[in-house]
Amino acid sequence: MNILLTGVTGQLGYELYSSLQPLGTVIPTFHPKEKTSISKALPMDLTDGNDILQVIERVKPQLIVNAAAYTNVDKAETDLKTAMDVNCHAPWIMAEIAAANNIGLVHYSTDYVYPGTGDTPFTEDSGTEPINVYGTTKVTGDYAIIATDCPYLIFRTSWVYGIRGNNFLNTMQKLGHTKDTLKVVDDQIGAPTSARSLADVTAMVLSTCCPDIVEEMKKVKGIYHAVNAGETSWYGFAKKIFDIIPVPVELIPVPSEEYKTAAARPKNSRLSCQKLQDTFGLKMGHWEDTLEWVLS
Image 1: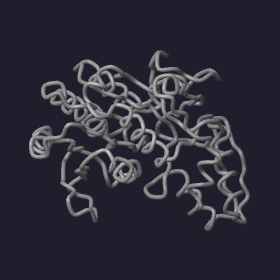
Image 2 (image 1 turned 60 degrees about the vertical axis):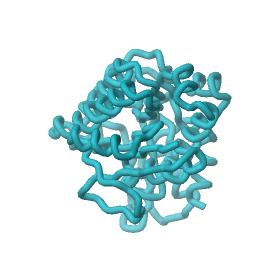
Image 3 (image 1 turned 90 degrees about the horizontal axis):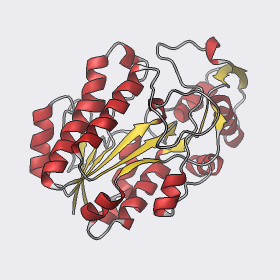
């Protein structure tokens, strides 16, 4: 089958391009202003509905995997239109086309759709109440997809990092070699999730839906949490990074109030993955083990 993959230049799209290969012919797309070395990749502007339609008509996919997103949480506070175009309008257009043409759609969402309060893991049935613009655009996109009733899987994840792109892991490695001390927030709790783990579990879920992937997706469609097991703070994440790759930098734990950002951050980003395990028999590895594997 033809698989249309968006956002191949991003950290998740990069990993999905490899993980999805056993399932079919993967045709990746990228933003026209970006560059990629993949010769068969197609430019596609997610802020242009006509461009999205034309690419889908050209590829004629049986499955769309939408890994592209507007993820600059702070910039979204003042760039609502672009964030809404990419995180809501684009997936809604894909879902409308998917519903009309019997195409499966895989989409990725975030822990930021929840209020971030309390200290217990959110489930897929927990009420959504985002505390910033980014979370609002993502949850609006989720509901837009659901409303079309297309064959969909939405994976809500958290704290994604990888070997490429702008993420916490790469930022810490850079700062660790240029700073003597680093202040890191210690009262926001979640699960660092490797892009490779997320890509692999996506491929495993889809493989359980083969050979008639669209019909099987209809039976299991819904929202699923997909994060690495365990929990920690950003400070704990940084400490583990520097335990694996020793760097002479002093880490100082600080409360959220001491690290001002344009957008509010949830203090509780814990997500229960019980539904993923019960439905597909899949359990993602512990975040510490996964981080060690990534850094090796």
